[in-house]
Every structure is written in structure tokens, then in C-alpha cells.
Image 1 (spheres, rainbow, N blue to C red):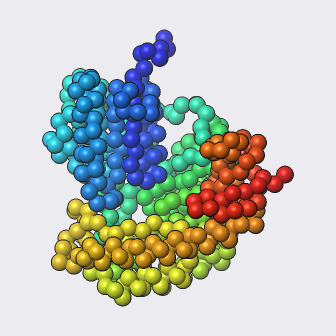
Image 2 (cartoon, rainbow, N blue to C red):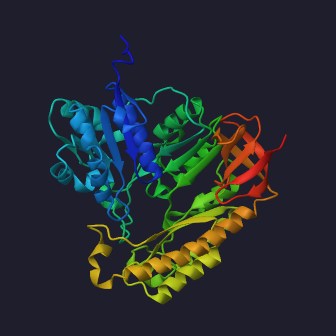
Image 3 (cartoon, rainbow, N blue to C red):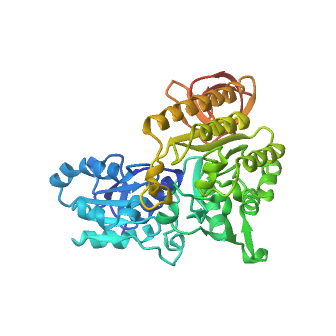
Length: 449
């Protein structure tokens, strides 16, 4: 007998961090759907609040505790309200979260959320539920089949998790574990299911996605497939029109993947390829295992395969021991590469990472901030130039939603620019659009008949 709406419990999930956390939140909601939960848009109407956390930035844990503090009144008003913490902060803090915030009912790490129904049942019985293990089983195999509801035209699909690079500043190897790639057959099954439900663009996700090495399908001889081979197989799916992937490490950008940018029409001309610094001395201290020159030569090979590609990157200023010259080397690299966009941050120590132990080499906070502002000004200048150069060009736009103005529709170009038009187009349609104006954060265009 089907549950009535009155029987359904309400779930509110707040997601922090990257696209992988967005994907994980979707799967958590689906896992709890089997326990009678349906998602709502505010914590005030929820029977369970779940914070899916990220541990990359400084004071991430403190932000979680601050957020939990906002829910105290809700818990007092509704003692049956369940509160959970998931994700990387949950993995790193574990029992400390329950000790500091006794109102938290369950804590689950990013590798264990397939066990959420059991943890929810345990919490419902009045026990504290904690699971931050790195289980041997594949969590994706144990998750329930995804519901057949209609989807937005663009979706995320995790194909790889964890990282073996151990960059000196990064907590991912400690909170997400070693690199693990999903089998090709399961990825293809999930991709086809997404397309059947209206998805036309899939972004393949991984902490180090281009290190993907998954078991190939037995029907095609099995073996181990790399990311380029997976992309080629996904490109055969009827109805899937666009493929992207993120985030990549320069050392895993092999020739097959470079070639794919020039030969696979469904692979979009956008690549996020973090370098972090332009100084060889700092790159060595970061344990990046490549030089600035090697990165630049790699960019040249990528652009030879796809000259119009939009490049994005990540940068850290004020890494322990960074000198003025080290920073100027970073500025020089940015000027040479000419990014379409980039993310930049002031270094923040993450507990348990090698860089956090270099307290005697910490850069003055004001100096690191000043460097960050200079770097961001240069990146903004380049981003604006790349965007302005789109005026007069024709681009392909996947329309995703209605805009704020009457009759306006908004979508993404192949270069990941937000594009808006005033035209009778439907969500999920892909149209050729001529760009007529470049704004601060988007492009205005006209649909070409």
C-alpha cells in the first residue's frame, strides 16, 4: 500500500562544497526516500536536517558547528526532529561532532552514506548513530535504483572518488580515501537512466577524475578503461549531447584524453586543470610532482588539440614559505596561459596535512591577502577578455531554466558561460545563439533560426 503525503517524512539537506557533494546529496536523498522521506526546501518544515559538509577551506568544521547552533530552537520546538552531519567534516571530526553538539543524532562519512537508512532507523530508536568507516563494499552498488522522475537537463555523475596524490595542503586523501573508480557498466547504466529522464548534459565527477581507471564491460573484452575510453563510450548514448569532467590533475592528463578534446564532438571545450602555483619551489613543497614549465607545455598540447578550449584553474597564495618571487612566478604563469576563469584562495592550514606543520614558514596574513587580490584582479581581467570575445560569435546553448525577466530563458554555452535570451525555447532544448552583449556574469544572445 502506497504511503500518503501525510505519512511522508520531510528531509532538508544543506550542501557545502563542490559538485561531488551536490551529487552525494542527491544520492543521500534517494537513499532516505526508501525510508519514507521526501525533500523540502527549508529546515523549519523538516523531520530530518542533514548537513552535507566540505572540509577543504579553513574553519570548515567551525562553520558546521555554527550552522548546527541555528537549529537548536527547532530541536527544542520539535524533540522528534533528527539532525545529521554527513560529508568530509563528518569523516574528519566524527565523535567530536556528537560530543560538542549532543543534539546531533547521526554522523556519516562520504564513503558510508549508503547506510543512511540503517543509521536513520538507529537514530529513530533514540541511539546516536555514527559511521565514518571506509567500507570495502562499493557504496554505489548498495544504493537503491534512482527514481524515474523527470530531471533537469544537466546532471552530475560521480565516476571516481578519493585521491592518491597527497598534495601537502589537501585533506581529500584523509577524508575521501584512496582513488577508487567505478566500473564502466554501472556508469553507463546510470548515464542511460539519466538521459531517459531528460538529461542532455552529464558532468563526470571525481576528486582526481582523469585518474579514472575502471573495469571495462566484459562484453567488450573487459580490461581497464581510462577516462578517454569512458567518454568515447558515453558519446554513443543517444540523447546525451554534452559531456564534461572535473576536477583533473595535470599529471593524469594523458595523450588519449588530450586527443579526445579534438575528436569527440560531445566533449565540451572547457577544462578545469588546477596548477596551484607558478613557482617550481612551491610546487615541490606542495608535492605536486610537476613543474610550471611542464604544465605550460601540457596546456600547449591541449590547445593544439582544441584551439578554442576555455581553461580554468585553481591557485593558492601565501602557501608556507612563498616569497615575493614565488608569487611573481605564479603571476607570470597566469599571464602566459590566459585563463577563461579560475578559482583562487589564500592558503588555510588543514589539520593533519603536511603543510599545516610548517608553522615557522607561514606567510603573513596581510601579505597573502594582498597577493590574492592582485591575482584575482589579473584573473578577472582575463575572464572578462575571454567573455567579451564571445560577442558576435555563435555558440550552442543548453537551456536550463526560466530567467528573471518575462519571456527570458537561461542556459549554458559549450564554454560554460551563462547565456540568456528572450525567445520561446523550452527547458532542455539546445539552440544556436548569436552573442550580442557581454555582461558582468553572463552573455546576452539571440536565437538563430
